[in-house]
Amino acid sequence: MSDVLAWLAEPLQYAFMVRGLLAALIVGIVCPVLGAYVVLRGMAFLGDALAHIILPGVVVAYLLGWPLGVGALIMGVLAALGIGALSQRKEIKEDTAMGVIFAGAFALGIALLSTQRAYAVDLSHILFGNLLGVSAGDLWLMGGLALVVFALVVAFYKEFLVLSFDPVLAVTLRLPVTFLKNLLLVLTAVVIVASLQAVGVTLVLAMLVTPAASAYLLTRRLPTMMMLGAGLGAAGAVIGLYLSYYANLASGPAIVLTETLVFVLVLLFGPRRGLIWRRKAPAA
Amino acid sequence: MAELFSRPANHDPAAPPLQVDGIGLVYDGVTALRDLSFSLAAGARVAVVGPNGAGKSTLFKILAGVIRPTSGAVRIYGASPGGHVCIAYVPQRSQVDWTFPVTVADVVMMGRIRTLGLFRWPTTEDWRKVDEALRRVGMLDLRGRQIGELSGGQQQRVFLAQALAQGAEIVLLDEPLSGLDVPSQEAIFGILDDLRASGVMTLVATHDLNLAAERFDQILLLNRRLVALGPPGEVFTRTRLLEAYGGHMHVVPEGEGMLVLTDSCCDGEEAAHE
Image (cartoon, rainbow over all chains, first blue to last red; front, side, top):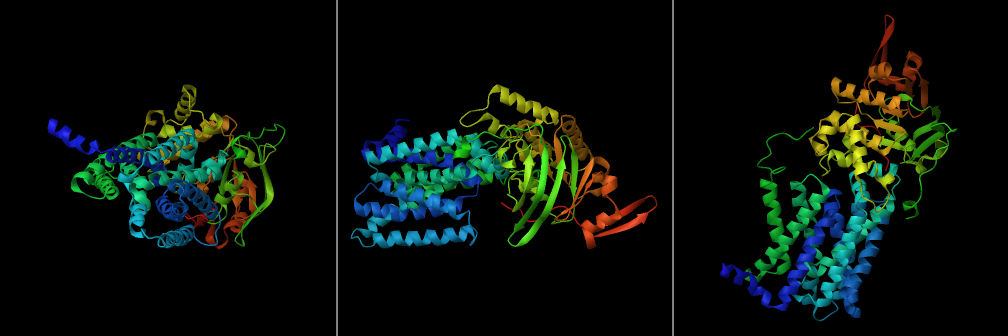
């Protein structure tokens, strides 16, 4: 027993590991709460695009010596509102337009960064996260953003639910549909910014989508899906971080791999929609 | 943002519940609906029939205020549909994501969220009203089910309960009867009777001309324009049916009545306009 405790306690003697663990927990919990809407509304590609579009904002902040989170936040909110406006037009299909902008912005970010000397190290931190380099200031920013997201998800819970389940009902109930759609996009951007330090631009999508998707397979009500997703996200973050410490793996990918494994297990063995147990045909 | 705090329009009791003045919709250069005018009274039960692509779903979305007509105007108790929360649109079953993690009671509660207002959670009283709506449609014992676990008829009844919880005075049902067995259809008609008794207007899009003729007070025959509106006996005449269905229909005189064969069916109505 004391061996197990020692094994668990060992990484925590380092302050950077404690900060990393707290950061991973914040991200692990907040992402699936909003991720539930990303999964239910089929916004996964949009989330990925948003994460990549944020890159030039991060790089410009870095070059100007601003906190990275500020640059990311400004870019993220602008991108979210831009995508919202784009989806109202119909010259070109929405996912095509997003693909063009997403790749272009990502290239711009990398081009800007490549003017710097420490290019390779910085790039890998931005792309894949640097959980062990989280500062106390970063933690406060992440915690603050997470609280804002929680508060708004709770405040607009029933409106977001109707918007996601039945957009036509949202209109006939005369809800402010455009405002709600944009708010959801902005919140997604905020969650992405909060997660950047932990898992980076390329893996943040997994934090949003994977635990929420596992929870989706296991539950029949949205509040349960959000809470279970948060639990799975937190567990994945902690297990992944220990895995990274003892197996000497990069922390972001270790967390994402843990969450992916959980998803595969749920998909196969989940009691309700799991492939192994599904005997009776779904109701028509 | 301003719409967050706007109040729904007041009903002018002197104005007709539903007044449609020359509405038309041109979409990408195609005329979906042309110059429709009619008026309906409270408690009216109307079957909306017409061939595929006649504009039934489009008409419903305009009446519900989801799409704005390119010409003409809809007046609900004297105000435009955009100001009302008394209109319920029950979508075709194929338009709903039945795997969504919500229970029967959750879906019915959605009808109440505008009445509830922003930043407020349902009270015991709200849940009591939800249960009352579920009892009226005979679904109370299934209130905790996930909606995908229901039969087609039960799914339709959940949305009717939602309309009841919303306090809807005009209910638009898009193909609620297709694909249902006779007992399920009867259950729906039972609820429609209940609605008529409480003065709620129902418009039901259907392809089933028999049901339309036997179970509805009025028929609205549509083919991108209003072909006829009136009691079944006056609307279902050879001339008018041919006018609406054209080559898609054969009318065979048979003794007292007539035999009507159409080749229009079910899903694949005109593409939904967002």
